[in-house]
Length: 350
Ligand SMILES: [Zn+2]
Image (cartoon, rainbow, N blue to C red; front, side, top):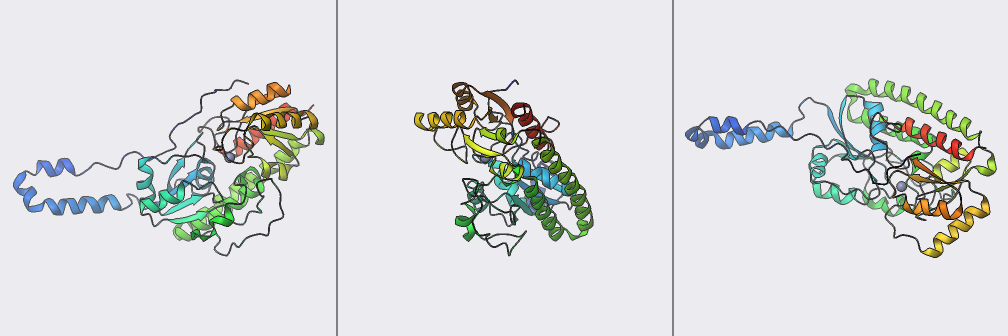
């Protein structure tokens, strides 16, 4: 499988520039008129820019996977902007100057929550936005950093609505990659649907119908992943990846996460020590993991080295935290999950 070592960094989808109407008209009016009515024109122009052009909700999704959920529920009824777009890593997203304005004008912000929001809180605060923040992972049964259950479920009383920030220390203790279980994706879609219905009652029936149709597709996807996982003998359902993004996947579909080249649940940690890499290689040999998988958002150099030194297959790409560009093999959440299980079967099934 060919892999492009260069990180893909295309901008997600900052909206095309705001309309530049007004200025030329004002000039054409001439100096005297400008002196008389200049301030009035400026006022009128400002008001026009604040108002939504077509009455649609302005919706922001913090990363591409959540953006796909919003698109499936809302269709073209909302104006959707993704911050971290296709092939952009939501762990380390660096907001562009335009993002502040996008948040300021937004009605709703759909975010993952957990610890994938280190950059969102300051951006939101600095933008002056009043947009309702919707934490789509609310209600998901969370796993900790080691992929274990066992924590008490935390409160979800404000399900689907704006959160205060006092919960940060609780949310931060959990693995953020919840969407890697399709069961969780369904909860995320339900939260998305509920927030859209609340914010835009005129289109509530449409959102409900779209969500029902999409959830049916997700249920088929879930079955498909279970069926394909069955093709892999239990003792070979072992995942070694670039970073620890597959605990929810492993938990749902009966895999075991052996380890990750980066040794961390995020992508912004320091590189592991030589000793840590040697320990991972020992572990791969000991448990007989057949492959090392490399995610698109992670530099593959380290994972490739681990695979080579362990004498196992290097498999790339799988998709953990970002979709690929629209129209490609992983341009939607459903295509991403199908691709991942198919490439796992290729590498792990005998
Ligand atoms: Zn990740």
